Amino acid sequence: MFLAELLSLCVFPLMMFAVTAGHENGRGTVVVAVSEGNYIILPCSLSSQESLVRTRFHWKKDDEREVFVYDAGLHHNNRCSGQDEHFRGRVSHFSDQLKFGNASIILRNTTVADSGGYTCDFPFHQPDRETFNVTLVVGAAPKPFVGILNISEVGVQLKCEVRGASPKPKVEWRDSDGNILPAEEPQVSRTGERYDITLLTTVTRTNSSLFHCVATQEELSHRAADEIFVPDQLFESCGGDIVLIVSFVCGILSAVVLIAVYVCFLYFTV
Image (tube, rainbow, N blue to C red):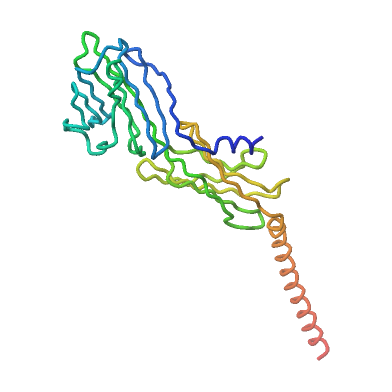
């Protein structure tokens, strides 16, 4: 069952989902998520569905950067200036939907830096001025990489690395039945909005000797995993090290005893 679950979740398609949260105008906040490098639609439509062809609407990011402006036929993709460089050439609107009050935009070639809050505003729409809030989550979901780090008398130490993930994933080691294994404290480093995570665990012989490293990003409803098979011979070598050490120590002690007996023999025979 656990393997089937992993297979169903490891594929990371283009995702868009909406969540309604409390908002002062009662309309809520729309949350959309997408994988890095794809496109996403940021929704915005007048409840009255009245035409926007001869009016104005604008999109801004939470840091007040200008994302897109439409003003009675002029917009950032023809003769309208002022668009932030970060969004230039990546944003467009639905010109054929303006007559239905649709001010939604398409954002292409998404990057992690696009994540954040966006506002769609109709400054000349009176008397009830409508403002729409959209939260965008752009995810980078690299697959974990696993390997054997060390072999000792305790067991086999496994290493799992996740590089450049965003949002920060939850990383776990599991056995073939899906049980979470004890692990060391994760080693986490951050560069901008991306996270590098290393997780170590020490395993002993199980029924299958198959282990999985699972990285989960709940904001994206995404899970990725990698697996490693540890041969029985490695577990046998763990115990073999102890036997070898004990045998070596016993050999040394035996040699010391024999030398002592020989010295005593020579002493008493002289």
